[in-house]
Amino acid sequence: DSGVTQTPKHLITATGQRVTLRCSPRSGDLSVYWYQQSLDQGLQFLIQYYNGEERAKGNILERFSAQQFPDLHSELNLSSLELGDSALYFCASSVQEKSVLYNYGYTFGSGTRLTVV
Amino acid sequence: DAKTTQPNSMESNEEEPVHLPCNHSTISGTDYIHWYRQLPSQGPEYVIHGLTSNVNNRMASLAIAEDRKSSTLILHRATLRDAAVYYCILRLQGGSEKLVFGKGTKLTVNP
Image (cartoon, rainbow over all chains, first blue to last red):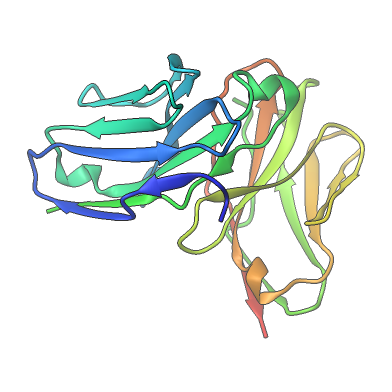
């Protein structure tokens, strides 16, 4: 157990639907990162939140949004789902806003497998 | 982001050392070399990082070439649990927060 909790572990939904993925960071970590892993694109950075505020954005589609709540858990909302959104979605956490400055590693959760049918 | 090149796959026998290479010929002076691994059905896991000197921790060792254009992750005694995809990633200190994952090296450990 890495300390980062993601729910649900599996999700099957239909095209056009909307889903919410949840992430609880490791205790004490203030930064949350979302990554998407698909067979053709590999692991891709989506977005980072630090202490409730958006800090960095990657290849996140406009149909996707995220937020981090006061208790530091984060949710990734995916809407108007397409078949191509089927992927593993990972959340990672870090204690710092700028982990890259301190060379901290990230702690990843076990992911949510989303299947769009 | 500077690019890394790793072999697609490698095989090892249990309890033998494993040397996983990574080439990063365009590395800059302030790029740190990070390694993550991803076990089956798990998220990536931080392994080790270094800048110029060789580094050791409880999981592995990192050997960095003198010109820094390549590095090698060393697992001293491979176990079945070490079977995973290993990613070599360059991180520019003060640069982007995002990790840029390549395709990595899939390590198979034979009993």
